[in-house]
Length: 327
Ligand SMILES: *[C@@H]1O[C@H](CO)[C@@H](O)[C@H](O)[C@H]1NC(C)=O
Ligand SMILES: *[C@@H]1O[C@H](CO)[C@@H](O)[C@H](O)[C@H]1NC(C)=O
Ligand SMILES: *[C@@H]1O[C@H](CO)[C@@H](O)[C@H](O)[C@H]1NC(C)=O
Ligand SMILES: *[C@@H]1O[C@H](CO)[C@@H](O)[C@H](O)[C@H]1NC(C)=O
Ligand SMILES: *[C@@H]1O[C@H](CO)[C@@H](O)[C@H](O)[C@H]1NC(C)=O
Ligand SMILES: *[C@@H]1O[C@H](CO)[C@@H](O)[C@H](O)[C@H]1NC(C)=O
Ligand SMILES: *[C@@H]1O[C@H](CO)[C@@H](O)[C@H](O)[C@H]1NC(C)=O
Ligand SMILES: *[C@@H]1O[C@H](CO)[C@@H](O)[C@H](O)[C@H]1NC(C)=O
Ligand SMILES: *[C@@H]1O[C@H](CO)[C@@H](O)[C@H](O)[C@H]1NC(C)=O
Ligand SMILES: *[C@@H]1O[C@H](CO)[C@@H](O)[C@H](O)[C@H]1NC(C)=O
Ligand SMILES: *[C@@H]1O[C@H](CO)[C@@H](O)[C@H](O)[C@H]1NC(C)=O
Image (cartoon, rainbow, N blue to C red):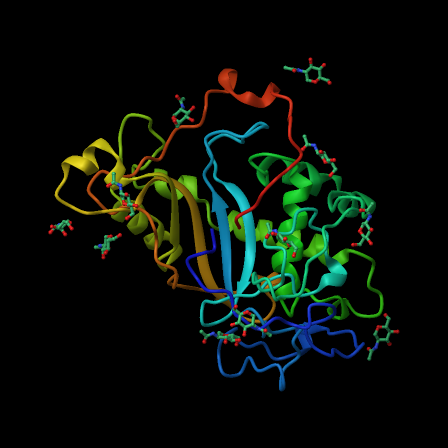
């Protein structure tokens, strides 16, 4: 789903830390903190562990799914990830192949082009076992409820999110954790931080407060959904839609508009800059530079109800272990 923006053609060295970072303790409370994407957020002059200098435009992303091959939590969107885009809206991915935990890398090169560095498929113990080894069973249980992959193992999805995106933050780099670093500590830190932002953006309730609730009989105006979320986030988020294009629906065919936007609400991306470490949640909402592909025709958007629990395919057995990610 990130095809709306270009992937920066340059690939980071893709095999180690983003910068040569000192082995100091990086006690950020002792450092000045700057807003990411501001002129002061210069990796040459600040502690890159304490101000985000690599991917300064953060996106807190969520899904609205109506079915999954596992139980969906009720009355809430689910967690997708926390992404560090460049300040100009483009992005890179898989920035540290020494922390490659994604069993199905997508794309399979660091820049998405055939001439990029190949990203090898991970075949070790899944990333959920890192959380177990650090004893964080409460975290794992929460993740299995709210950070779910629509199909396939949740942990594969978490591994994808971590290795594709988290490795491109300067502030989650291993040397930032100082000399007492415990293996995979930054993985847990990234998961916790991502969850913290997810909790700050309660999409389901935000829409509900504006009278927008899931319905299989009433359709909504794109602009009403966007306005409701913008009012509460403080900036315009990106909305993602799937399903048929408006021009392929009966209403669309009969209309005089040539609207080719899609009609089923399925994603939201909240954009922000952060002051200091993302872990500290001091953020400034910013408008999304990405253009929505949703239809903006009147009454074109479905915000579908979830599949009723007794009809859900929770009891289906997964017959394929192949998962493809577009995000
Ligand atoms: C950094 O932390 C280590 C381990 O806790 C400690 O031994 C060392 O003195 C600290 N260094 C500084 C400069 O504070
Ligand atoms: C966006 O910023 C990145 C990082 O600074 C840079 O590598 C890339 O070339 C920029 N892209 C555009 C289109 O300016
Ligand atoms: C992955 O890389 C291989 C070898 O470079 C290529 O043949 C294949 O098409 C790529 N697959 C995807 C999904 O990009
Ligand atoms: C990689 O391929 C892209 C697109 O085909 C091209 O623009 C770029 O110059 C190539 N880079 C290298 C290093 O060959
Ligand atoms: C597992 O991945 C490693 C690193 O990419 C590779 O060297 C190894 O051959 C893989 N093992 C199997 C059984 O695929
Ligand atoms: C709807 O628009 C898309 C994108 O322009 C086009 O490919 C498709 O043929 C159109 N479908 C109909 C039924 O007009
Ligand atoms: C829709 O497309 C048709 C055919 O290209 C064109 O004649 C018509 O003016 C367009 N309508 C609008 C509202 O853009
Ligand atoms: C509605 O969508 C069309 C095409 O998707 C776009 O050209 C147009 O600018 C949009 N209008 C508004 C008011 O956003
Ligand atoms: C509502 O419609 C969606 C999309 O067709 C479907 O997946 C879901 O099961 C439906 N929910 C109910 C309660 O009928
Ligand atoms: C799913 O797999 C389990 C264990 O292999 C088996 O007992 C069960 O009958 C299967 N269920 C279905 C619906 O195939
Ligand atoms: C599951 O993965 C294994 C190992 O990658 C592969 O050999 C097998 O064909 C896959 N099964 C299915 C149903 O895709």
